[in-house]
Every structure is written in C-alpha cells, then in structure tokens.
Image (cartoon, rainbow, N blue to C red; front, side, top):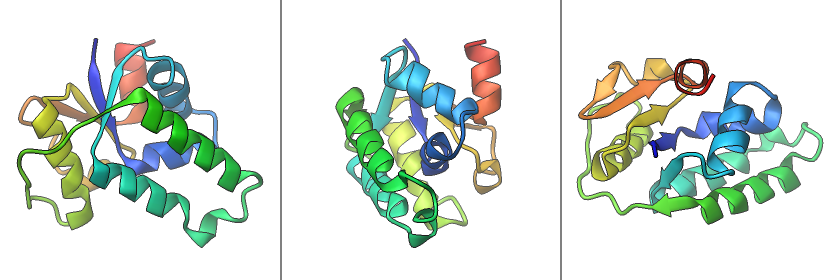
Length: 138
C-alpha cells in the first residue's frame, strides 16, 4: 500500500471544491486505500490554517473542517520525525520534508509545487493532486 503525505493546501481544497484533492482525501485516505501520514507539527498546521478568518465566507466551512480534521486524525498514522531539514524558502514547509523522510513515504501531494523546487526528496516523489490521481489511481 502506498504511503503518502498531503500538504495543507490539499485539505483546504477538499472543502472548497470537488476536484482531485477531494478525490484523494475522500476516496483514498478516508477509505484507507493508501496510508496517510501526519506528524504533530503537520496536524497543528492543518488546525491553524483551517481557522483562518478568510474561510468564514464559505458556508459550513467551520463544521466541515472540524469533521475533516477528526477524520484525518482517525485514519492517519502519526510519525515522529527523526530529522529536521532547513532546505525550503518557506520554512514552514520543511515539516513536510521531515515527515516524508522519517516515514520513507512514496509521495508528498501538494498543490504548491513552487514551494518544493525538486521533483523528489530522498525516496519521496513530490507531485500535484491531479498528477497523483491520474497517474496512480485513474
């Protein structure tokens, strides 16, 4: 079974539309078709970002985000990163490298490929939601 990590933007996109992020979260992660990994730091970022005021304009965002966070927590494997990297310009994204390195994940799925200036990191492919879905699940 594939091991994946998802960037925060993928979770946000899941609540704002029914595209590839939605399919990855709802069809693969929550149905345990893949092993989703999180760390305490990554989950904290999810919680923090979901509470941004800019999302208040979306109907039912708060209750749907709380449910999604609970579902993610219940279906994911929590990893304690063994190493901390300082490679990315956006320092907050380094926690995802820490996570995928420590778990030897197959994929890091992100909608912000510009924040990750390389296609692979150690043994992990960094890939967009669309490419991941169409290449590995279509």
